[in-house]
Amino acid sequence: MTSTARRRSYGVKGAPYAFLLPATILFTVFFALPIGYALWLSFRKVHVSGLGLGAGARSEVWAGFENYTEAFQDSEFLHGALRVLGYGCIVVPVMLGLALLFALMLDSDKVRLTSFTRLAIFLPYAIPGVVAALMWGFLYLPDVSPFYYVLEKLGLPQPNLLDGGPLYLALSNIAVWGGTGFNMIVIYTSLRSIPAEVYEAAKLDGATPLQIALKIKIPMVAPSLVLTFFFSIIATLQVFNEPTTLKPLTNSVNTSWSPLMKVYQDAFHRGDIYSAAAEATLIALATLVLSFGFLRAANRRNKQEEAA
Amino acid sequence: MSSLAIRKAQPAAGTTPGTAQGPPLRRRIALVPTVTLLIGAIYTLLPVAWVVIASTKSGHELFSTFTFLPGTGFTGNIKDLNAYRGGIYWKWMGNSALYAGLGALLSTAVSAFSGYAIATYRFRGRETMFNVLLAGVLMPPVILAIPQYLLLAKANLTDSYLSVLLPQILSPYGVYLSRIYAAAAVPADVVEAGRTDGAGEWRIFTRIALPMMIPGMVTVFLFQFVAVWNNFLLPYIMLSDDEKFPLTLGLYTLLEQGSNTPALYTLVITGAFLAVLPLIALFLVIQRFWSLDLLSGAVKS
Image 1 (cartoon, rainbow over the protein chains, first blue to last red):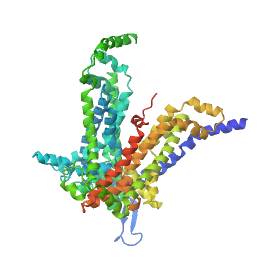
Image 2 (cartoon, one colour; image 1 turned 120 degrees about the vertical axis):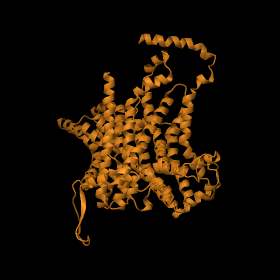
Image 3 (tube, rainbow over the protein chains, first blue to last red; image 1 turned 90 degrees about the vertical axis):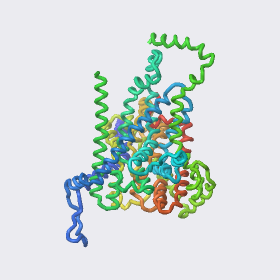
Image 4 (tube, rainbow over the protein chains, first blue to last red; image 1 turned 180 degrees about the vertical axis):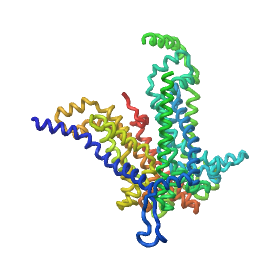
């Protein structure tokens, strides 16, 4: 009797660890180990002795912060970082602005066709970034695009969407198109969790839908806005698929347009995994600093507002 | 509370006669939100509509006829796609289905185990383990993918199905969602009742908890299926043998070759059209008994 009871209690005690075992193993092998290895590599370099011929002529040595200082002096890498910051400044506000707008519209009274429009706006979520970039890429090509056809018929100027400033808009548009729906669902879900009584009173006091949206709904979904902002910053700084896919269609996207593309280029085409590891670490650090910096700023503002 | 109820009741009584006479159309349909959402839907459907129409055009028609005019080459395009390198396109489709289907299934199982453990047991290191697993979400895929490649290369596993499948099984977001669903769907006293009846922990999980967690697990499966199906970076880094490519990578290589041979463009477009069909179909079917809201962790209370 006592032995079975004890066995059972051992079973209960050990059970959560057993359930967590697969995740722990996968985390160790595919998250912790690679991150540690990347960090280690970022402080290493290849030392070539003599002409670099023969076995033992190339050896891996400690490099200190050399790879990092080189990355900071690499103008291609820095330009890529600036390009992506500019791109992010367009994508994140536009995408989340639209997501919030659509979520508020879905949540308003007497709105029709919502099951259709909600699914349609969400649809791009299910479409791979590569396919999205490919579809838009063709729509940006003057030879096949309906936009150019219309512009031509109207006798309007036809900007080259795949070059210079418009290229940023063209790339941003792909990201906005792909990401708005998912964020809309997140915000809409949190809008629907607001109890109706909260704005029932405001409605009776004669508040317009716009006032209710601005004064009640938006402040109440602020936490989900902060969260979508946070994840959008992380995703945007790692942009890779869309510019890579557009590259075959234009000469303006080079192989190091975004920092991530440069990392790929360094690791697999130049064969310099050490610089690539240092650059990848810098991107990860910048991502964490920006995203958590934003989170902290948002939290501080919240606290101030609560105190006021 | 009672004053609110009174205030609510009065105007409602006052407006009833008005509604009985039938209010103007403007009142019954909120025009601004409906139209705004329709514009949004047109924006999102536009490129999809274009790819559907463009896939019906022959290579010659693609560059010569108005873009939104259907062409006559759809069957020809499908035949060309079938013929391209011995039907490798369908191999890519199959590979994508394998990576996404099997990957999402394994991922859902791992997420369910972890989420259930964290939600229902009290044990040392519970919050720490959850936070560490969740931190994986913040790791840029590239800082992971390159060392993953180098490490898998040491194990002679690169350029294999496993190299794409294995790194995507653990999904931090899946674990996060599973914890929320398990906490909301599996009452503690039900688990306790199972224990007093003498059921083992594994039996309680598979027979009692898992069935309660099913709607949440469908969501985790869908989320991970889409994530794997849409992934480009990992297979791009891991694979060189195009027999193992998923659709995203296959279409990309096709497009890359197309910049030299525009004849391939029709293949790319037809391929893109066929590539979006399965997921659109999946969502249309599944939304009949599954709500989009579940994707953001919303749990009905």
